[in-house]
Image 1 (spheres, one colour):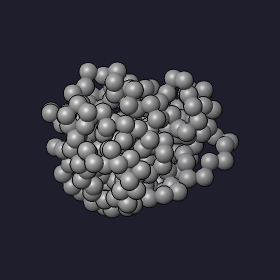
Image 2 (spheres, helix red, strand yellow):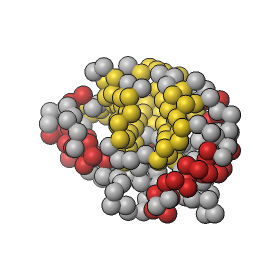
Image 3 (cartoon, one colour):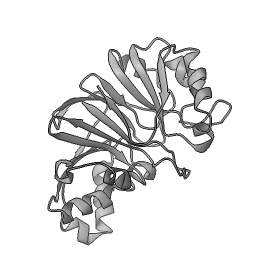
Image 4 (tube, one colour):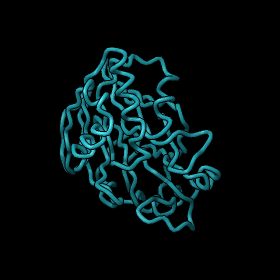
Length: 244
C-alpha cells in the first residue's frame, strides 16, 4: 500500500500546501480520500492513470475537503472515464445531488454511485478492507482505517475512541490545526492530541490540516505531542509518499 499526501493545509491559504487530500494505491486500485482546493493540481503532478481513479472517499462535507471533487470528475469524463463511486458520511447523497443540479453538463455525463457510511462499519472498498469511526466535528465526520495499517481522520478534536481504533496500525494521519494556546473548538491542538494518544498502539503519527500558525512551528508541534506520546511524530508535507 502506498499513501501519497496531496494536501496538508486548512482553510487559510498557504503557498506551500494544498487543502486536504490523500491518494491510496494498492495493486491496481486507487482511492482518493478528500479533495480540497489544490488537490486536482497535485494529482496532475503525479504520473497518474486517471481512469484508475474511480473510487472517492469523503471524511466530511466541508468545502476544504470537497472543493475539487467536480473538477476531477469532469476531467475524468472528458478523458473517457465517466463512472465514479463515492463513499462518505450521512448527508453525502443529498449533498452530491444538490451539487450536480448546479452543473447539469456534469450531472448528465458523470455516473455517480454514492454509498453513505455510518460509524462502526467494516466493508470492502476497491480492494481495501475499510472500517469507520465517528469523529467530533461540526458536521458528521468519519475516520477511515485501511487494511488495519493506516488510519486517516477527518477534522476533529481529539477523540478518546480513536486510541482503540488505531490499535496495531502503522500510521495515523490526524489533523493538528492550531498550536497550543489557540482556542480551537472541534479541532486538534498538539498537547491535547498527545494526551489522547498517550497509550495508543500506533507506530507513526503524521500531522496534517495545518493552519499557518501551526505550519510555522513544526518542531514545537512534535515536541508538545511527544511529551505524552513518545513515538514517531512528523509533520506532513504535500506530495510526501509513505509506503506501508
